[in-house]
Image 1 (cartoon, rainbow, N blue to C red):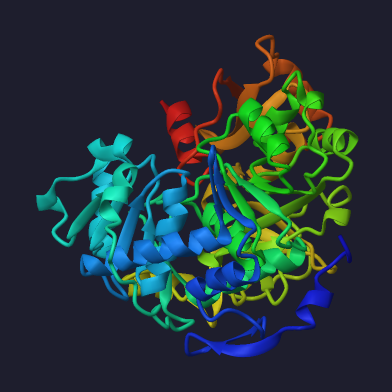
Image 2 (cartoon, rainbow, N blue to C red):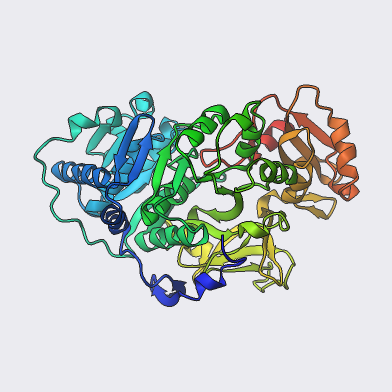
Length: 528
């Protein structure tokens, strides 16, 4: 890939007014909305593969035709622009086709996690006022009773979609959605209190998709494997709409299992992935890793946790053509806020990358002043990808957004060269007798131990010091020695940062629907 930063991309952007009071750099030549972006790819690459799921394959021409059928039948049952369509659907073709069909009529798609239980589904459906719900048959027992979801006018089973797609329904003309119209509502993880519905506009989605296209140099020849949940912002943007922007192929895998992933990646000549670092580790642990032809794999995107140096080195040895790209973002930033140029990954593994083209990231202290270069503060982010706010929640919007910046709640720094580092969530910082400890720093060091597969650092209550450092580890083998890990950490960290106690798990770390480690659950477990 060319270049070591994004200045050559940002140079071609222009400043535009957004959402009334924001002025941000944007790509000048872009699709007006989500449907226009997909339709442009269908026109540009009609016979190229667009969607692959097992034995099912659709070209871009076929994808556009079927999406129009979805749109026609959405209109047949009375859905129109602005209505919300909830998707309780896993990684399958119907998720993508429903997304495009809803975009055609200007409806708002509300993806729900397949891990959500009945009360959570009911809350989201009622909070957004969904008019229709598309669901997987195996998740039917998660659906709340009709009486508890008064806004729902239609429940559509994805496994019996052909019965819904009646012949003869007229799609009509596509709705001319405005760039600032909401296209997606994605509910935040809800680690504290009720989840909030982040409103992703058409311009947010198009802009973020173009960021991926530009920074990863995506073309119609690219083939992306989606193994993260499509209902997550990474699944929707880094996988679905990034391929819609470049007219590439999306290979959909229901869930991540290392052996199956490697077989699909080899068979489909995959060129791109965006996964958690642990997934790359699990691939490398497969005894027959070398047997798979992964020579087409050129982009290995990752985020959410540091990539252990040992993993970077092993991947470089086994897949020399694979460029590792760290990225940092969130639902509120429509996925990417930073992207690490792959040429710089080996030398800056402690950084999540440089601000995306057109993005401004600053570290702000508690007094609302920008911290000096390299010093820690709360990361505030402004770009064309930052959402306009939360669905029908003015108080939360006012609290989290200021002058176009989104207050991330993450503690981090921006150095003089622009490299962004993320140390912790403000609420996850450990205060050991007045000494501040950033769990991400400790995790990054301990993740480099050869016996560690996954690790999380959390605060353990202490009546004397307030909090102490505790590690929760998923080891690579059953003969793992916690005390050896402590000794290893003591050689690399200040003494007060070394975990004083360690919990060893036989299973992976618990993660929420968005793939983030549920540290609150870990803290509650060790506090008992």
